[in-house]
Amino acid sequence: MDIPYRYEVDARAGALAAEFASIEPGTETERVVRIAGRLMLRRVQGKLAFGTLQDSSGRIQLFAPAASTPAFEEFSHLNLGDWIGVEGIVMATRRGELSVRVDGWTLLAQARRPFPDKWHGITDPDTRYRQRYVDLWVTDEARETLLLRSKVFSLTRRWLEDRNFIEVETPTFHPIPGGATARPFTTHHNALDMDLYLRIAPELYLKRLTVGGLERVFEIARVFRNEGLSPRHNPEFTMLELYQAYADYGDMMELTESLVAHLATELRGTTKLTYGGRDLDLTPPWRRATMVELIEEHTGLRVDVRQPVDELRAVLDEHGVPWEDAWGGGKLVLELYEKTTESAIWGPVFVLDHPKEVSPLARDHREVPGMVERFEPIVAGRELGNAFSELQDPVEQRATFEAQAAYKAAGDDEAMAVDEDYLRALEYGLPPTGGLGIGMDRLVMLLADAPTIRDVILFPTLRPEQDRG
RNA sequence: GGGGGCGUAGCUCAACUGGCAGAGCAGCGGACUUUUAAUCCGAAGCGUGCGGGUUCGAGCCCCGCCGCCCCUACCA
Image (cartoon, rainbow, N blue to C red; front, side):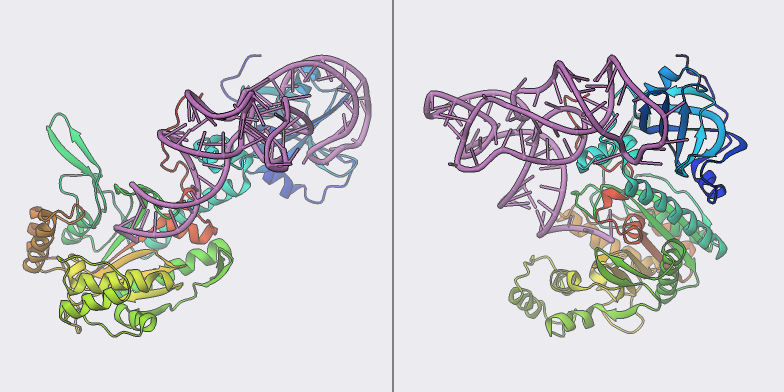
């Protein structure tokens, strides 16, 4: 059968279902429609055949009497999964099922491979991720989750644009990886004969734009980190980063909780969600608590980054947390927090005021020595993002870069390097700025109640399959 | 990288303490003018992820490898 180059479609299953919701059983309307999609079910009984056609909006029944259906034999031998276009009147069967009568039909593509079980679909997660093109047809939750993801992004863009943020795109290839502590992927540019790194964060470029006078910018950035995979980690993932001039981290907290509440309300109709069967109330304002307070809540210990390192090491030892000689008070306190406290937090809560030692891009806390103005929103027990009052003093920034470079020289391959051009930009003047990063994949997980990040990424990173067709 | 679990037909799943590897759906042939995972009849399809080993006999036990899932480690 010849496959046409195009097929004129003027109706969709979902819209027809809405339009003819109250059609009486046995009705034949005069409405002629052209609709296309995949044949998902088929019920042939001699001189009358029924089919279930699915398009991106839903399903509708096809009604095909032998007497009036062209090429009835061929029609009733279509395979599940075949794409067809159908032209015919809208009607309802005696049982009241809304249908399109097949007055004409066209094969649009053959399914040359057998479709999965029409009732059970695919259950093997590996097959689902590898063959998304099938999964999207047979797994309703997969389709719904990925549509929800799309809405999260469009709603986020609109919400930020309504607040005068402009969307920008900055380089994916970085000569110096920066903006986060993570191991980068390396690649090579032949013509320039130089190594380049896939970005681990867009942060330093976006702040260059703030220096350039773009007072409110955001980027929805695919970033790449050369790390392991887990239900919460994919080597490439999507971060929303935004920078707002004249603002501080307090403003970023308000922005974070209102954006997340807005998305929950738009997409789920409420800010009182459940995630993994557990209640999760995203209604602002979220609790604000300092890292030191939270450590005290969970361990009963009041620690301070200015304590002698011997004392802090002893505390870590008591809690069975390993430490390294190179760590100062800040890193020791962070480690204590991460190992004893963070996993016990359900949230949402803003964990405030991180040690300066582990926050080379954040500005000193205006009151607490040794700490910076930084927070991480913890939601459903995991980090959803990271934000700070941005470090804007080029002299201070050079000092923290150099401290990072020393760690790197000592063997920490996640530490940052000195970025001279970024320092030059700061020397032209970065105003007080609040910056925020949100892990969008994790945000979608929360809103979709998805247990693993692979469910919210169309094609998650997998080991390549071998010897399979 | 460590610990645990899993891998049977295109898909979903069976197979007692080792004893001839099965079913449903899909696909193929046939019956059937109001079905809804349509129903009924028939023929066909895998030799159990891969490679070794133990045994009269291995899908079940042992060793190695491959792949997936979960926990853990690194991070958002």
